[in-house]
Every structure is written in C-alpha cells, then in structure tokens.
Length: 421
Image (cartoon, rainbow, N blue to C red; front, side):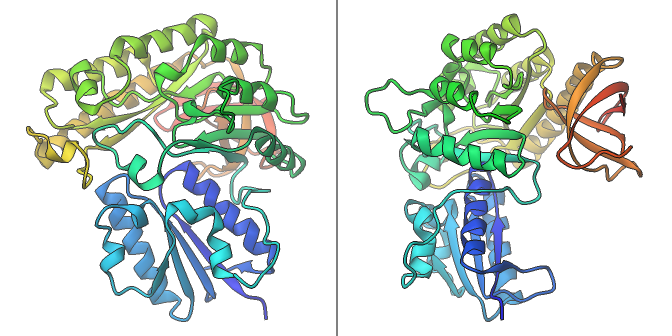
C-alpha cells in the first residue's frame, strides 16, 4: 500500500521552495501526496515566525494535523522552531522538531537507513505556473524588528552551477517563468569567497538558459540595486520589468529606528534609476504600519511615497513585536486600534495608486502567463503580465502555462480585463 504525506507551508517564498523540495524528495521515495480525505503517514510543517499572527497560524496548522492524522509522524521545521522561547519547545504536541540549520537534511533524519536520498532541490512547483528557485538563505542585516538572522542564521548562497542545473531541469519540465528568491537575495555570492560572483552574475547566467521566457528577482533592498544589475537587466530579453523593492517606511526617522540600510532618498534613487532605464518598469513593496515611534507625520510620509511611486501591489503588515528584538525594548509603542486604522488608510491609498497605475494599460496589448480560472468571472482565466499586473480574459482555447497576448479593455479594482488577440 502506498504511503501518504502532507506538507503544510507557512510564510515566505523561500519556505515554499523548501516545501516543494520535500515533496519532490518524497515522491522519489515512493510516497504520494494525500488528498483532503486521506490519512497521512508523514506530515511536515514548514513554519513562519515573522509576525505574531504567523506564530498562531503555524501552531494552528500543527494542531489540526495532529488531530486529523493521529497515526502520522509529524515533523516541524522552519523559523518558529528556532525562535527564542518558541512555544513548540514547551508543548506536549506529538511532533519532532528540525531546526532551520538542519532543514535541508530533514529527510536524512526521518529515513536514516536510506542510502543516496534524493537531492534537496525542485523539479516542479505544484499548483504554480512559475517556479521559485531558492538561491540564498539567511540574513546579516539585524533590522530592529526582525528575528530572521536569529532563526535562519547568517547569509549563505547556493552554488551557481547547482542553481543553473536546477533551473534547466525546471524548464525541461515545462516552466516558462522562474523567480529567483532568497531571504536577502542582494547578498548572493554563489559561495564564492573571492567576491567576484554577485546577483548580476547569476542573472547573466540564467539569461543563457534555452527555453526560459521570463525571469523575476524577488524581494530586494533598494541599496542592493546597483548600476551593474540594471545593466544586466537592460541586456536581458527575458528579465521582467518589475521588481519587489522593499520600502518598510517612507520616513527616514522610522527607517533609522528600524536599522534599515537606506534612506527614503536612496529608495527613490533606485526607483528613478530603473524608471529612467525602463519607463515601463513597475514595483511592488512591503510596508510595516505602526512601528514604535511612528508619528502621524511619519505615516503621512509613507502614504506620500505610495502615491508617488504607484506600486502595483503593497504588502502592508501591522507592526508585530518579536521576542528578543531591539524593537521589543523600544518606547512609544502604538496601540493596536491605531495601527489597524493606519493599515486601512494605507490599503486604500495603495489600492487607488495601483488602480491609477493600471489605467495606462487600457487599449494596449500585453503578454500574460495563463495561471488559473478567474474565480470572479465565469468563463474567464487570469494570469500576470510581465509587469506583475493581474489580467483576466475569456478562455478561448487557452491553457494553463500558455503565454498569450491580451488587449486590455477595462480596469477593475481586482485587476485588468481584456480580450485575447
């Protein structure tokens, strides 16, 4: 009888990549992924601890699996395992904990008797038409609000050749779009102590892979977008003209309290350099709302940046105290009701800015990677453009993973709507 497994993932794209690697490894060992009605023999939970809410979601998922699969071996890994005073270390849950430092060898601990276990890398990305490829892990920044350097360790990069081989296999399996991801991808060095290998080096090598049609760079800090990287993007026929560049706050006062490595002016320098080179370039970002000491004037500066840049998408996070961080010990913490009010204001401003950005596409024809059925429009499918804008269109004999040309007819609060040409 086939053995069954479940993998539950919380948090970032790096976690999503790692969870897919577990799935691929288990498939090669003869395990099959359990559906919702089936019991599992093995459950793996890849946790997140970036916010208090992430902690709660991780614990909830573990408890649900223990209840639904009472006979399963439950292995918990990810950032919540490494968090200082993690509730997992003092719980009576029937789980085995694997810290982040041993995450890539998790199956070695579960199957110590198996020789030549499959490599920890992916060949496909379940339920996705784009594949996230982890190229770097860890962080050296120690921002005042963040536990990532403590739970994931210092920055370390994957070998350049290994990354290229992995992407080549994904392309052979039909993937047309790759997202290069990591915890702090701007630190990428390919494991090269000489300092000659950088993110721009990786992009140039990925650019040579035959059959690959789109490449994206995931979350990056503005001070890590230098002229060399911009030149490489300019020379590439497959680099998407869209990037997730982290803001966190539009106030220099708050950025300094956060211990970020850049100022608002440096953020705009990055945006303007890219816009001057590529007038069609679009941006997404992360913003923390209600950081300790954030005045209404500070928050207003953040709103001004959102309105000025017109981000395609803003991921807004209410400030969450993380144990052991400098921010935990700061004065002038803001009450949760006020944080919630500011988050609503930010959401309204960012949604309006994104709507205004999309307006310029009406009447234009853009390429879209077909991803899934549109849940709001019967008979329509949807996908993302090169500029990371959601586009819906009638099915008309298109299939998931096709890249199609769509003439944009309308702009809606949820994205653009058009017709296939």
